[in-house]
Image (cartoon, rainbow, N blue to C red; front, top):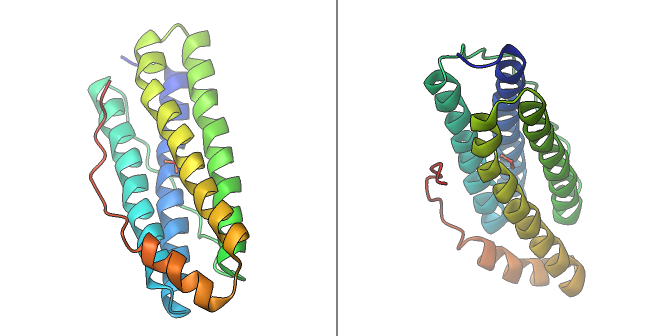
Length: 170
Ligand code: FEO
């Protein structure tokens, strides 16, 4: 049986991962509306990865004989200004997710739940990768500019991102 405090924070994290999927889908719709199909693709692929993150936590809570508590998912922000602003928003969002993952790690250690402490390492590594991926796009936009002919080239590159199902691995 999983520790109740750890179970609670894992359920909160499930909610955050599915909220992240919502947020990325809202961004994907925005990019689609302004004709940036590659940006739309990148954020849609990210939304699918966020759902995987949520499902891996979901399965883990069940595996530990815990209760999955699916909570209300907040509506995402819907007003966006431009691609740079959206990616800066993504960076801030991912930094906040990193902090919440670190809180899961800290709590599971404080509660001597070493299985969860070990499990959450995968998410810690995933956050390093996610923050780096977002920063990469921000740097490109800042380096090359926000004019549409330039964005078109970045857009083509982002079209190449492919979804691969994320599975938990040690
Ligand atoms: Fe699941 Fe983007 O963190």
